[in-house]
Structures are given as C-alpha cells and as structure tokens.
Length: 263
Length: 263
DNA sequence: GAGTGGTCTAGACCACCAC
DNA sequence: TGGTGGTCTAGACCACTCT
Image (tube, rainbow over all chains, first blue to last red; front, side):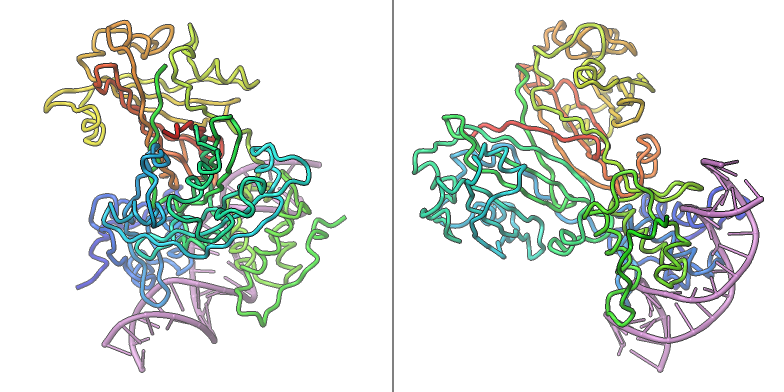
C-alpha cells in the first residue's frame, strides 16, 4: 500500500500562495486531523515529488516549514516522522520548599521516580571564579569577590532535559561541602541553612528563545524546539541573595506551574 | 566600502562540517563578537556567494540556520539584518494583586505607560460557548454548562505581543458587565468580586513552543521566535475556579518573574 | 544494494524596495 | 532601473539505514 494515501489533495499552481507552503499546509492538516499520527512516517521526498509534481527543493522547503514548527523530525537514511510529544515534567512552584528537601539522592532523581520516570545527573563540575556580571549583580557581589560555580546536566529516562549552573558566593561556600561535587543529603540548600543562612524565598525569571548550537547539542534538541531560560535567586531570612542558578531547559519537556496570591 | 569586510575567514572545503554550516558559524561569530551589531545589514546573498565561492542555495541554507536561531531577519527587497532585540516587558508575579487593580483603563495600558511604552488593546470579542475540554476541566464545569468567552490582542508600541482568551462560567458572567466588551473599571476581576467572588489565588501553567502559522500571523512573529503559552486559573476564597485565561505571548517580548516562598 | 534524507550546483523567473 | 530576497527547476554526489 502507498503511504501517499494520506494525501488526497493536490496543489493549485495558480494560487498566490507558494507551492511549498501549500504542501506544508496539506501535511500540517493531515497531522492535525489525525490522518498522520505521532511517530507515523511521512511519504518520502521522492513520493511527495511525484505526488505533487514538483522539484525536490520544493518538497524540502515544505518539510523544512513543518520541521521549524516542531511538528516533524527527519532521520537521515530512515525517513521523516511526525514528532512524538515527549512526556512532560510539571514543575510545581513549591518544589524548593524545605519539606521537599530529600535525603541522600539528588532531588531531581527522587522527583523523577515519583512520576515513574528515571532521573539521572551527569557532567557535574565544580569550580571557582568571578561570575558573569548579570549574576554578580543579583548576588550583590563586591569587586573582586568570587563564587563557587556548580554545573551539571539532568536526564529523564536517558534524555537530557536541563542544564544548570549554580553560583554561590565563595565566602559562603568555599571550604564547605558545597564546593564538593556531591554536597551531601539535602543538597546545597541544606548546607547553606546549616551554616546559618536559612532560606526565605526564591525569585525566578523565566524567558524562552531558540537554543544556541551549544545548547542544542547538550540537550539533544531537534529543530523547532525552544528552550526555557530560568534564572533563580535564593534569599536567606536576612534578605541576602545566597545563590543564583541559571538553568536551560528543553521547553518540550516541561510545564512550569506557579501559584500567585491575589492579595 | 564593502560590507564583506566583516568576513575575514574563508571556508575549509575539506572539512567534515557542511559548507553552509561553516558559513553560518562565521556569521554567527561576527554577530557574537560585535563585528555585526543589532540592525546592521549583512552582506547580500550575491556578495556571500562570491566571497565564499559557493552556489546561492548554500548561502541561503546558511542564512536559514541563523534565521531559525532568531539571530537575523530577511526583508524582501531590502536585505538581511541582524535582528534587534525588542524591549522586554517584565511581568511580576503580583501583577494581579488587588492593590494593582486600576481604574478606568485596562491594566495592560496603564502598566505599559509606567514603563514609558504605549500599550493598546484591539480585536476585542465576546461570545458565549462551551469551552475546550481542558478549560472545562479546570473550571469543573458540569455537562452542558457554558462560559462567557472574552478574547483580545495586546499591543506594545503598536507591535502585537500577546493574545488572550478568557473563559468565565456563564452562571457568574451572563447578564453582567463581564459579558460586555468593556467590563468597566478594574476589569472582570473587579466585577467578579462585586458579585461575591472575592479572589484568593491564581495558578499559572507556563509552557513554550514554536507558534502555529495562525499565532505567527496574529503576533507578527518572525522565524525563530517562540511563544509562551500561559494558562491562568483564578480561584475565589471558596476555592471555586472562576476564570481560566489562555494566553499566547511573543517570547521575545517578555520575561516572566515569579516569587516562591521557601517554606 | 535499494531507499532514505543531506548537501551542493547552476541556472531561471518573480516580487519587493529604494533611487 | 538595479539590487535585494523569494520561489522553483533539474540535475548531481554523498552519508546513513535497513535488509
């Protein structure tokens, strides 16, 4: 049987709308109406060429449009497929509440297990340096002061979904377990509180954009998948900013949930 | 003088990396290092062809990469330009607090004026219908119950940046100013509270993705600009969900700021 | 080896913009 | 009118995947 059976329509060469856009419209509608479902293979480029009677570049332009919209992925040597929506991880706004601070394992791993997924952490690096100006401002860092810099990558069922770089002023972190790759049970927030910096509140600044090539590589992002950038600042009960965490997240893997009081 | 002066390097045809990717790398680096600044015109396709000694499609592939990353915009008949970062609107998490409820004008307009920009609202539509299942679930709407549906578009300095569709259960809204295009001072939240539904809290679910063609048209989005989808649910002090607002925002125009308690 | 998508060439005609 | 990007053709060779 022919995979082109999903394509009933033909193009209108007299239309003002570009041919490749008409083809993209057809395929998008086929996906939207369920004639093509998640994971289904699209007709090959050769099949689309003969079906619509156009050159290869025209077909490829149409497929590029859908790829940029995040609807399909092309796999070299295999075919073009309707992109499967990955399982989405919902981040609740109380995820840093003290009562959720877990023992032993990293919080990410435990939270993942609660949703039936397998979480893991890799590429853990710890260093010490002057942070970017944007971070130094948030930490109200004086000239010449530095930070402990902790960076890592989080994976969900083996797929990288998030990278995080955390900055803690050196006067709070140097010489403590915070400067170790494994900061111990409860993570760096537990260590900060043990040292007298009881946490009061966090602020999160959320933006979204297309990834840099570097980010696309680290998170194995396909075309058409944007990233969240989430910059979190932690404040202790004295109002001092004690940590800034700069996180890049695959946007197709997350929904961020927040609670806002009305008064 | 030649605009190609920004291009010192040449490509390495023996490299494994595709030629168009090498050209994209060069141009990206030129933008990153400031040799090409916001608003600057890139060398024309013809100039790039002769500079690198490649076919036009190769040049266009390189430009497409940067366009998909949101770094450049092509203007038909004029040239290709380094995309200017638009002014960003920062949304604070207390923006719906009662004390910020403004008189007379729409909240969006007043907030815009405070930042020196000009805000406006257009395409206001009000109707009544059964909402999508996702919204009906959030409102705990019984079978057969409907909602008042209010939709509009927000513009900042003339540029559309956000569309919003608001759903209010008909038993709360029908026959009140909420069902009018202009709900009066303080907006629909003020009207809900007047009718005994004092607001207690909101939840916001934030996701990000590439826009549909329809969204790209309404928000005049260039390629490489994702959208935020923000679904807000308003609860009154009895715990009843009294409104769901489904918002699509141009991601390059917003930073979402949230406050999270640590306890 | 057959079929797939990835890259690249060398043209062509068109629509849009500025001068 | 000349230069710009937008669309399209008709080929070519390559790298990858599956059988």
